[in-house]
Image: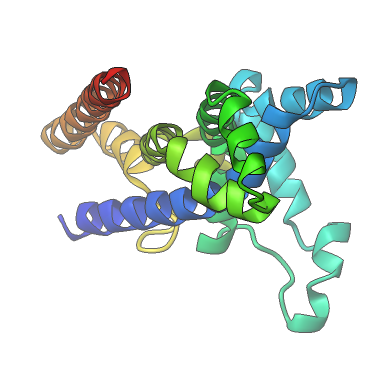
Length: 225
């Protein structure tokens, strides 16, 4: 039971950390994509969407190589005493950020695009700077996209399996998450414990989807008024 509690803690910690990091990372990306119209934008969009179509084991394999001790990227961290990020919580966070990136960028980008040009034209007539317009106009009006992104990223991170297994190694109390623990319980033929964990994830997934629908309905109704 202690192993299950530890797996739940690691999962929640990973999902919360990934969500906070991605809200910061995805905001400028979503803003840039919503304001540009060129071929390079399509290339960036395609790269961001890759985790959706790539098998998680493929992404996990390349992350395993990139964060390994012989990687050129890790050479930059050798002077700081860091030789690998594989099988560490920090490695899990990096992998989860990359794996869940499209689930953060797309809702935020859509929210910015839905604003249209009029609010920015009004802000310009009031002589607001670009930073003032972004923080006082764009961000508050796009809050629906941020809420959606946060819920999707958190839920998607909780449900990760292939990527976290490849780069985390399922170390109890360190990199073992709930999805991996369920797999291990099934292998051990511990069906009651597997049922409890799987059922908990099922309820959680339903709650996230229901929350998204409620948020969408309430914000749409408020906007209509």
